[in-house]
Image (cartoon, rainbow, N blue to C red; front, side):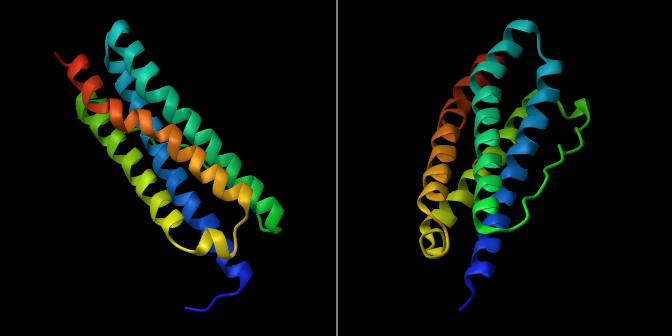
Length: 152
């Protein structure tokens, strides 16, 4: 499919925004789950899942806004998703949050595998997407261990 550079750049921004939205959803769910846990388990959730996800979220937003600026396109603002009800249960909220992290990683992985970042992106964008995916690694790998620890 043929596209102009501007269309390709906008597609890149829109796809990165999808990943950012998924990370925002994960953070919201972790926040609600944290409130449902005792202090020790909440601290473990925060250290091993929330903080790395928060770092990835912040980095992804910077990647998005910096690329938009370099491309002369408008940057998007990202609203925090509405918090789900606590009755979902902390375990389900954490599992859903980890699923959202996996969704974000899948979105970025597919984008990296496409030629779009090479054709209309730049070195800084590609490095930024890689950095976000590196930050997402620990929450994905630690999720099962954290879930076992939280509900043993």
